Length: 531
Image (cartoon, rainbow, N blue to C red; front, side):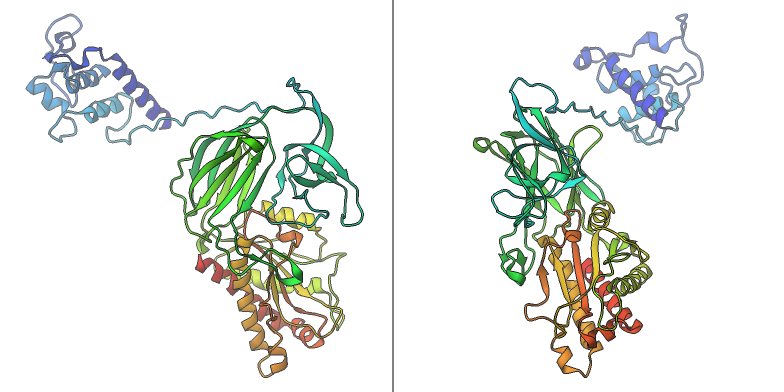
C-alpha cells in the first residue's frame, strides 16, 4: 500500500510538471487530440466515471485534462465537466484529478492522500583530534566511559556539584594538569581546559591535534508522548555542562549548600565550550514540558549556551544526552509523567557481600531493604505501574552498576530504599535525599507519607513520635552516587534506624515493612498526581 501511495504522489507531481508555462494564459477549447482515438476518429465509447476524454478507460491524460481546466488552460465541455466532477461536489478541482490518479495507480479513489517520504538525514562527518588540522598538537583526552562525572576545577577537592553534569562518551577536551590521589581527592584526576576535573579512569589521554573552533546549529525538534528531542549539529564532540536554573539554594544538612525548599526552575542551560558561534531555531510543537530554546553566544570566551525554557516553572523531569547514528547531538527531555504509562526503578540498597548496616538484633540492612522494596513493587504493580529493580535477590551490585542502571533503565523516576544507622543508639526517624533540585518534589512526597506511617506505627509512644521527623524537615540534599543522575527524578530514602533498638524491632516486622512500603508507593503516586 505504501509503495502505491508513493506511486500516486510521483504521478501527480509528474502531471503538474507536464503543465506548460501558459498556465495563466487565456482559456482555450479542450484539446481535440485528447478527446479522439489514436487514429483521429471521434470517440464513441460510452463515457465512464472520470473518463474526461471519453475513450472508455481512465488514464493519466484524464487527470491532466482536469488539471488544465483548473489552471484555465482549457475549457471542458458541459458533458466533460459532469464526468470530471467525480466526487460529486459540484465543482472541478485538483481533488478530482487526484481521485483519477489513485484509480490509475490501483488504489481506491477515496484512499488517503499519499504522504511524501521524510527527507533522508545525512550523516555528519565529525572532526577528531586524530587528524591534523594544521593548528599544532596538545595533550588531550577522550571520554571512554558512558558517563564521566565532572567536578569544578576551581575547587581543591572532588566534591560533586549539581551545577556540573557528566560528559558523555566520545567527548574531547584538553588536559591542563594532573592531580594525584590523596588529601581531598579519592582518585586521580585530569584538570581540563573547559573548567572541570574528570577522573582519569573515565578517559584516555593522548597527544592530539589541536581542534578548530566548533560551530553548533539547531537541526530539528521532535516531540512524542515520551520525550521532546532537540537535535544539534556540531563540528566535533565538544564538552558541555548542563545547569538548572535554581536561585533558591540554601545551606542545610551537614553544612551542604545545594538544598532547596522547593523546585522553581524555569529553564536549563547547556553551555558548549570551544564554540564561539551557534545558530538556528528549534520549532517545538506538542511538548508538555518545553516551550522554546534559544542560543546565547559569548564569542569572547568561545562558548555558546542553549537555554531551554520550561512551559511551567518547576515542571521538569530530566534529560538524556547522546549522539545519534548520524553523529548529531540529541538532548532528549522527558515529557510530563502520567500514571497510566509510569515506569519506576526501585533500588534495594546493599546486598551480597555488602550487608549494609547491622541492626541491634543482628539483622542485615540489605535484607530489610529488599523486603520493603518487594512490597513497594507489588503495591505499584497492583496500580498498573511498571516496575524495574536493580536487584531481586541477595546479589552484589556496585554503585556504578546501580547508577548506570538508573541512567539506562528508561524509567520516569528512581527510588533507592535504605535503612539508616548511627554510632549512637538514640537517633530515629526517616529521611529522604535528592541531588538535583528537580528531584526534591519527589523526595518530599515520599517522605511526607513515611512520616505519617511512622506516627501511626508509634501510636501511643509520644517519645518516638516526636523523633519521626527531624528538626530540619528530613528532606535533604546529599550527593549519594546512585541519585546523581540527570535522566529522571531520583531520591534515596532512609526508612528508619537499625541502630535504635525500638526502631530496629519495628523495621524487622513484616507488618511494619508493609506499612512503610505502602507509604513509599503512596508517595510515588502522590508525585505523579501532583504533576
